[in-house]
Length: 127
Image (cartoon, rainbow, N blue to C red; front, side, top):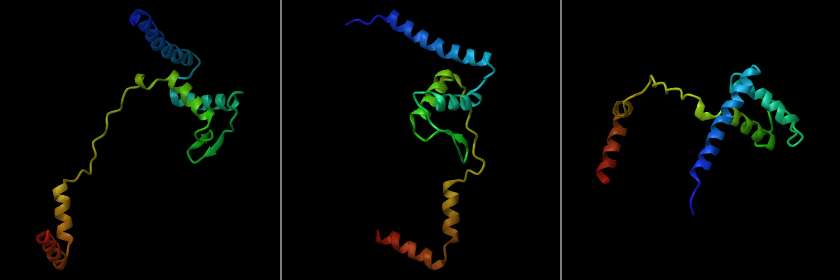
């Protein structure tokens, strides 16, 4: 069986261009980011005749029922319009309070009482 590479590449090109065109269409309508589009996608999913779900207020704001068809549709539409591959990764910030493992163990050892240190030494000998 041979694969028609040209046809496969045409599908890939169409898929690559489609997400860009959706984002461009939304930008023309005044929606520049996924965060701006989310409330509208939520409203769309809640009103769509296929999904019909009620939007409720949760701890972090408005939300659709968890794991419902409407919520999955909302995220699916947002992922098509704003693919993760197009968003730059934010570099991880170094942690300021990184402590050396040996230093941490030494502080723990120093905090032990004399009796606890002797007991620990006996445990090491018995092993």
